[in-house]
Length: 343
Image 1 (cartoon, rainbow, N blue to C red):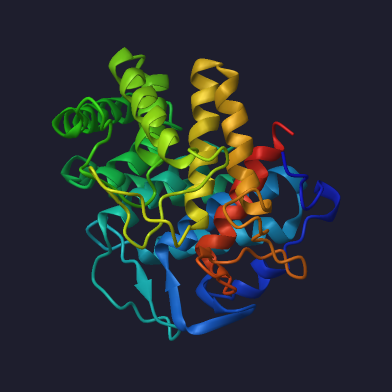
Image 2: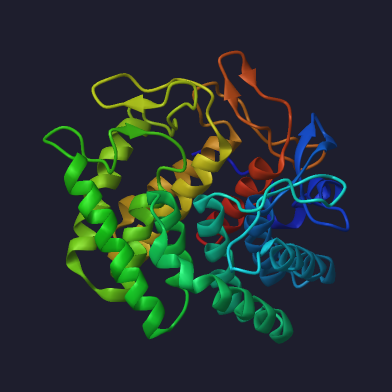
C-alpha cells in the first residue's frame, strides 16, 4: 500500500479556494490556473457540496461552511421552474442551456440527499435544499439513463422516507432488468459497453439493498462489481477503463485516459459494499482504489500536486495530464476524506 501523501495535519486546500469564486467552482484549469473560459457546471458544484460538507464535518472550519453555502446556492440557481436542472454556465453567469443531462439531475439528487441528511448542514441550508429536492422529485420516475437512476438511488438512500424508498425500489428494479437484458456467461454488466462512472451502478444497488433489504439487489450488485473488478484489477492495482475506447463487449479495454472520478466512485462503491456486507475484501479494494491517486497506478506516478493540493486530470499514455479541473479535484478530496475514515 502506498503511503499517504498528506496526513490530516498537512492537508492542502489551496486549489479548492483558487478554483472557487463568488459564483461557485469553475469547471477547468490550465495547469494550476483556474480557466474562466469554460465557466461552471452544476455537476461539479453538486459534488463540491458533498466535498465541502465532508471537510466541514472533519475540520469544523468556517471557510468550509462558507463553501457549503456557495455550492448549495449554485444548485438553487441551477434549478428550472419545472424542477429539473441546468448544467453549463458561462463565466458571465449566463446559462448555456435550458436543461442539463439526466446524469446531472442524478448527481444533484446525490448531493441533495447527502446534504439534507448530514447533521453538520445548517438548518437553513437544509430547508433550502429540501425545497429544491421537493421540486425535483416528480421527475425521478421519468429517468431513462442508468447512471442517472444510480445517482438518484444513492442520494435518496440517505433519506429516511417511505416515498424515497419506493422510488429506490422502482429504479433498482429497472437497473436489474437492464442487467438481465445484457449479461451472459462471461459478461456481467448493465450495458454492452463499460464506459464512465461505472462503479455507480453496483454502488446504487448496494444502497438500494441497504434501504429495501431486497436480496436481488445485493446479488446483482456483488456480481456486477466482481465483473468490474476483474477488468480494473487485472494487474493487481486499480486501472480504470480508459475513456479512449472504453470496453466493448467482446473487445479490449481502453488503456487511457484514466480519469480521477473513476477512482473516487470505486472507493465509495467498495466502502458501501463493506458497510452492507462486512466483507473485508471490499475495504482492501477501497484502499487500493484510493492509492491510484498516490502512485499505485499503471504509470507509477502520483496525481497530486504537492504545491496546491490539486489533482491532475488523468493518466495518459505519456504520463499525467497536468491540468487540474474541478471533477478531478473534488473526486480526490472526497476519496481522501472517505478513506481517512478507515485509516
